[in-house]
Image (cartoon, rainbow, N blue to C red; front, side, top):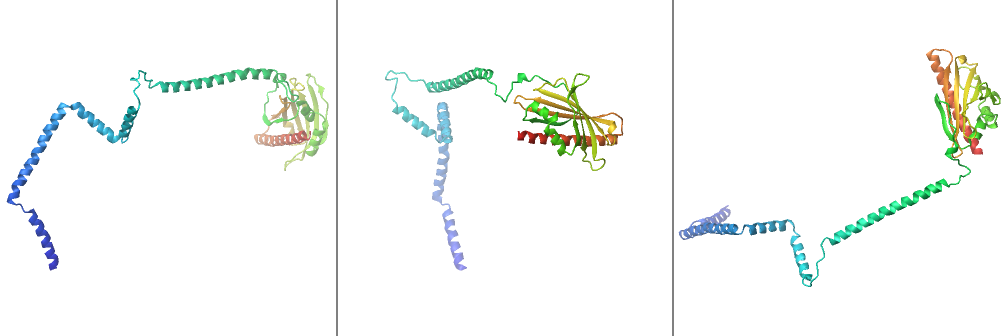
Length: 332
């Protein structure tokens, strides 16, 4: 403890002795302080006089200093510019004119404009050169054996195409061949009804009716797939070819089906419309529509039951017919 106290006393006594003011140094301190205080006043008066004498120079130097501080590369750029100016010979001394500074930029822009104009001109000439040749080649194009001109297909269907659309497909077969497959005593139609377990198939020939239209009658006994009710039904179809039909282009046929030996068979008939239209590629567009026409008034529940089961049977028949046609066309 005594040694620690001795050390502390020695340190603090030393500092206190150094801080004690002396009589001789007091005057010197006062004189120094007064001299220090006087000198800034003189410097301020000198700076003020300089600022009032040269204000423009002072502001210029201040701005240069700030810009140099902000842009650290300013000094390098200035030094390189000075070196380049010194290294380049003076063209005015030799009597030559200096080239314009913007000449290089203007030449560049002119070349770019010329390039763009050339591109536009090339495009326009290409378009102008292609169009006439295309038109000429299209006009002088020879008809391939498997294609037809749209001007040749002038027949239009006069039917309203009312009812529910059951089928809309394009078959890769000629319209005349498809008409013979569906509306004649063709082997395809007979085998199709045999697969569907239809019996007593009788197909009449096309004859002229009282209205001057081609008409024929087809009767058969079809098998019903309903779980409840009768298992068979007799169907008699009256097929009428409309006047708008034209061989090789269009066949428009209305089919009126009358059912028998099923409940409420005398209260409704089924109206179907077949539209077979030829295309430019020698294919055939097939459209089939169907609607139910009620001859007598029935309860709403009975009407809904008839419509539901009839449309379901017609849709199933059209899908089966389309699948069978695809298989038959692939064979050929």
